[in-house]
Amino acid sequence: MRQHTRSTALNASRRTADLAELEACPEVDVLVVGGGVTGTGVALDAASRGLSTVLVEREDLAFGTSRWSSKLVHGGLRYLAKGQVGIAYESARERDVLMRVTAPHLVRPMPMVVPVHRDTGLARALFVRAGMGMGDLLRVLSRTPASVLRPPRILNARQTTRLLPGVKTEGLLGGILSFDGQLVDDARLVIGIARTAAGQGARIITRCSAESITADGAVLRDETTGRIIPVRPRAVVNATGVHADALDPGIQLSPSRGTHLVLDAATLGHPKAALTVPIEGSTSRFVFALPQPDGRIFAGLTDEPVDGPAARVPEVPEEDVDFLLTQFNRALSTELTRADVIGSFAGLRPLLRGDEHSSNLSREHSISVAPNGSVTVVGGKLTTYRAMAEETVDALVAAHRMPAGPCRTREIPLVGAASHEELDALDAPRHLVARYGTEAVDVLSTAGGDPALLAPITRGITPAELRFGVSHEGALNADDLLERRTRIALVDTDRDLAETAAKEALAWGEQTEA
Image (cartoon, rainbow, N blue to C red; front, side, top):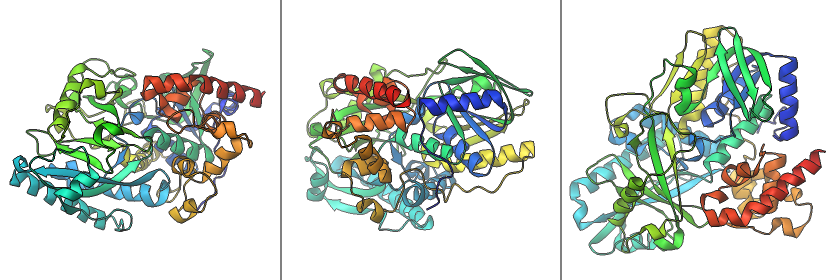
């Protein structure tokens, strides 16, 4: 695998140095605004082509939609159901890149089961099975081997309940088993992309906003000090997702809210596969109960249009909770109640405006060049971030006639990536390897031999990981550590247990850099 050309560590001192360098030398090839999966993907693509690149993010990496997904790297079954074969194939192809080249340490196969009951209806069951067969054909066409993602198959009732202990047994005929990719954490993917971009020479600056963008340049604001920093980029990329219209009024968006509930895995009998339930009245929409490595389950997903300005942190409305509980209870032996919901979160999809309901709007992305020369990229999905970034950089290179090399991101592994054989051979705890890949040994070294720093605080997260978040992953405050470097804050009681450890890790970071 290719060696990174610079350090991939992001921290407070590097941020200070990058800002000082930008003030002293404001000329830059590419300024990327937005630190989600799309923006970091663009920064990595541009930097790896030899373009001097700066990414600024008003809050923190993965602060917005990129941390509120279903954590699936999927092949696009839903798009096949709508006849959108092109989007589905792109998803399957990019899933293959993630699972086998760029992030095999962060993506693993996820078994998914659609239970079939007598009242399911033969037509619907056949439709779902046919769709999964088409999805498997796309897996073959994208050259993903069966050793990575196994083909779908039919289960009998006993096999179904073995994988889904909580499923309703009355009238259960069996199930339809398929496989897709699951991220250990969507925010960790974004952080990995950003750090890989830093290794290619990009400057990744969080807590820094773009106050204005004109044909003559851009004005940045350091949100920690209020300092104004004028810069002169040759090209600007607007990758701010649902807020893209604030920088480019020509963009028309129809944000869609996707809500998930957080459950304890015991509530569903500790399932070994994702429960997949077709939504009543729809042939292309499903809800998923997705088991997580920490013993939680993320149960979603809604798809509701959002009126008015997009919130920075969307709230979960009561009707979304009711909708999800109702849909899941159709397939469960013991009904879920609100008492079973220990947390929740919602994200906003930046869909292009149309006349249809948000669930029917296209998930295709759009790349446009504004009159001031800035390039805006919106839409798309987490799975296809790399392809979106490639097209975006192609567009800005063409629009501004910039000399740049060819796209290389299909072959550049993210920090921590290695083959499964290499990962299995690492002398490090398996739970660290699952989250950090080859960098698990660096997390261990952060502990400095102190066993207390490797003792779990809650949900398996250790103080050493919080320290690593400060020294290598750009965390600047407790929220960065608890909400995005880890997902401890999804459940209030877990956050309370970890708050002190997060503050201690930040204090350690200040002492280390002093």
